[in-house]
Length: 139
Image 1 (tube, helix red, strand yellow):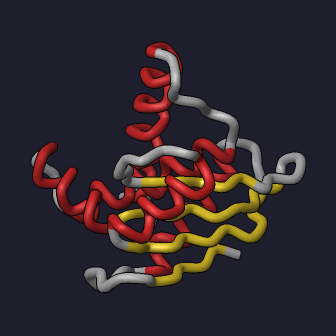
Image 2 (image 1 turned 120 degrees about the vertical axis):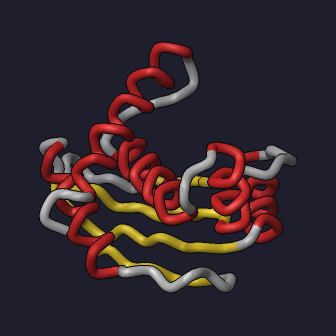
C-alpha cells in the first residue's frame, strides 16, 4: 500500500494517479508492492533526519529508508518539498515533474539501483527517465 503523509504544506497531489503509476513502475522492475510511505516535509525536517540518522549536516531532497523483503518493496521515503520546488526552478521543469522524479528515484533505490558512482548515476538517470515516461501512459 502506498501512503502519503504531509509534514509541510504542498500543492495538492493526485495521490490516486501517483500511486497507480508507482505500482506500475514497481511491477515493471519485477517487484511487488508492500507498504511504502512518502513523507513530504520541509528542509529543516529532512535536515534533522539527515543529521540524526546519516550523520550528514546538509540539505537534501530525499532520504529513503529501505525495508524491502525479498522482492516486496517496503520503506519510508522522506522528501523535502522545498528542495523539490528549488530544484524545479534550477532545472527549469515543473514542480510536479521534479516531484515525480524524486518519488521514482526513491522507488528505484528500493529496487536496488544505486547512485554513488558515475556509472550508477548514469543508470539511475536513465531509469528515472524511463519510469517518468510511464507516468503519461494510462494514468
